[in-house]
Length: 221
Figure (cartoon, rainbow, N blue to C red):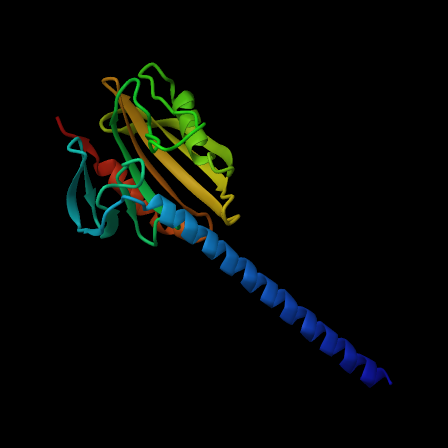
């Protein structure tokens, strides 16, 4: 009888684990489907994806960086026309270049059909904490949760700028993300290099490359 009861319990446990596995797979597939929807919307009007070869690259005719390894780049940026590079796919990791944003300009212009969304306008008089608040608002437009982990002075483009690091729980698929931004207000213009990726694998994998790109950055003109 004991052996029979044990066999019955084993069978129940097996079926329970099978149901949990099926449920997990369904959750993963649902998350992937949601990410695909986001990708489809984000890529509207982006143009082709191009390969960024190693060497010097000029962005928006004002910022020059050096890539030590190949990346992928969208021909015209995403919907807000921000130059965007990726290694694993734009819904996984994204390196964005905010180049020469002037006083009164939005850091990420909204599509013309966007309604009821507050524009995020840069002012040359802003302090680093205020600029970070703009990026927090940008990153949480979809309901994701943002935590600022660090904000500190940092050299960028030959001047004293700032660096911020944050954690983000992405609403669309509940993936824990990490991000870093390195920026400076130079002669009234904002320059920021921003990178985000899943916290556990891709962020630590590509962060050294991002920091190397930031160190290589130079302003043209």
